[in-house]
Image 1 (cartoon, one colour):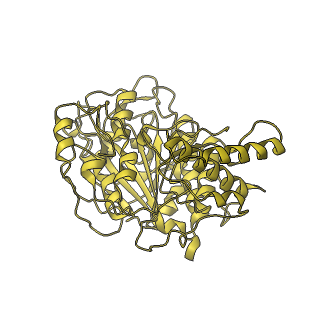
Image 2: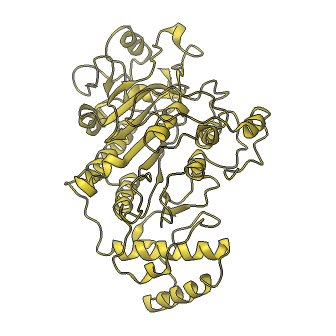
Image 3: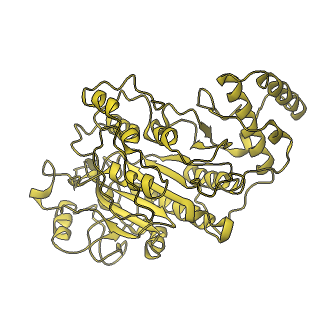
Length: 451
């Protein structure tokens, strides 16, 4: 198969009859109990360290003065060409991210300032990405990702989905490490058995299905569900894909990936979590200005892709996917306040996160520490005031209806919602005492999400 299944074995298999049902797909009715959670969580990781101070710069007050002094070349201006788009009078939006401005004004975009890993021990990309995606800051030996632990601990998910967990692209991210439900998919049109002409492939499918249905081991179950997923996707992607509501995705891999994800969402295959990466944010030199340059191009690609995705999925009734969709955008860390001598920025600590949803509480959130010298970490970095896990925890509790924070984020002992999404305030559960002891002792290697 040209698209690789990264799981060792699917937990459950779908009915073999799926293979012969042209045009079949799951929908909300197929999952039965209306009390089951049918939310979709999309996790977009910006690799390299996004410069949040360029995406959402201060536009007024004393921090504006600190910002301009530290960034004589890279600053986003408040007037003239390349001026920031006003958000709340204190912060603005980079002009290249203009597609996000209307979403913000409509209340669908929440921006969380000064978020990240508290007490990050170093500014290594690899360490920080592992800490964030594993959900265990300070520990890299964890054997499962935080999204994997969400799926295994949630008690309210539909049974027997065809594609519960999806990584768009060629690699499985560490947030889905250890997942027994994760599928990698880059291009739906190539999600197929691709050895030989169609008649051969059809015979292969028949033979493989007969072989896999001969037993109930994890390997046989994996084979059946793999074939089910291939059949369902192939039956529904013929003839291409036309986005709804006039949505136009940007050219390039990220736009293609967002379009693919929208297509998979609309197939109603029981998708619960999905991941997408966008790289290139390690802007040590030639970062560019607000009028143009490398970062401006990346921010345009990001914002155009997000806006098209939201527009494509916005609708009414059963097609109003945005009412059960939450998109989180995060990077491993931010950039320093001062620009360097190469018209770029160095690795920093505090950064912003973004949450896009029909259930978002739009606005700028979080405890902003300011840019005065005494407020900066190491005299150069935005100080982290919001643990990134608090943002994810609020989404897990209020949207995904999963309060098992002790399993999803071992080592986390408190939960303080910021008010970034609407939903029920379930009582968080931190009771995984056995694992917490191991976490505090630094022994995470043997822990499994099935505990």
